[in-house]
Image (cartoon, rainbow, N blue to C red; front, side, top):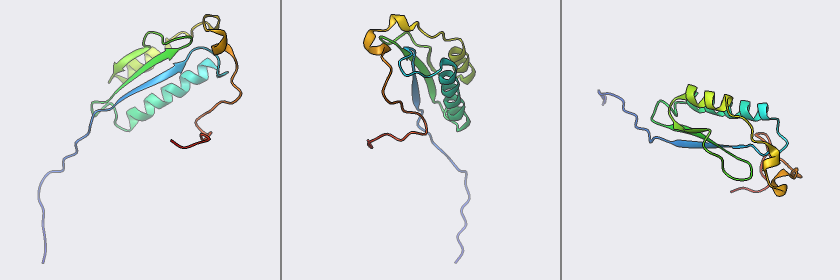
Length: 118
C-alpha cells in the first residue's frame, strides 16, 4: 500500500508580546553600556527567530525609583526598538530612593542559574 499526500504546508503562529525591563537605578552594579548591549542582543535574537515576522512585538521600559515612561512602546520594528535602546539615557542614580541605591549582595546574570525553580 502506498499513500500519497498532496497539499500545502500551513503554519500558524500566535503573536507574542515581549516587554524588556531596564534597571536604570544603578543598584545592580551593571555597566549601562553592557546592559544596553545585552538587551539589544535579546531583541536581535528574538527577531532572528521570527518573533517579529509573525506579528510579535517587543517593548522596553525602564525603572529606577519607579517605572519610567516606555523606552520603546510595543513595536514590530526591530530597528526602531534598537534605536530607542541606543538613545535611552540612564536615569540619575541620585533620583532613586536610598533602598534602591544599595548595592545588591548577589546578582544574577544570563549564566547564573536561580537558586530555586519556578
